[in-house]
Image 1 (cartoon, rainbow, N blue to C red):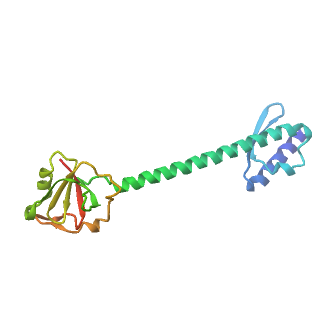
Image 2 (spheres, rainbow, N blue to C red):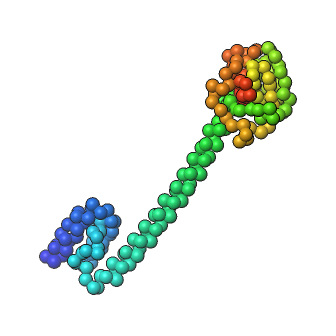
Image 3 (cartoon, rainbow, N blue to C red):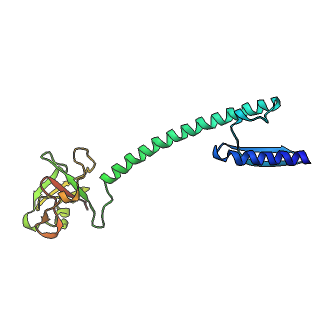
Length: 193
């Protein structure tokens, strides 16, 4: 019994002393019944208490530890790749924001080739979002541009026409001054009807 107490005391000291190195291990002692002891393994290459009978077990523990380390590295690499993919999706989501309650999607760049290519019309001083939506009936998107223009289209995602800062769509609609009607070659884009 004294030998058993001395071994347990030694293991407890070894576990406490190895906390700094953080090498997890579980040891099971056989002394009439199994007593699991959990803790951290000290640097086993310098341990005096390992005899020849335990060397084979120690080699197995080292091999498993190496496999675990390689698995952890592979998992970290996969998580890094997933993180990059998620960040890419988030950037795409930022480019195509959720529509506001009135269907507003955002301010988008335009040029002479036109982001929204169909039924381009100058509705003049009477332009409102509802009139432009009526004009674009049957299309997915309605665009307001340069205070009085209405544009229609079915495709929003286009690298050539990215979302731009809201401050670029700074011209109030001629017939609805509390709403911005794009800017110079800038579309305030809404969901269509």
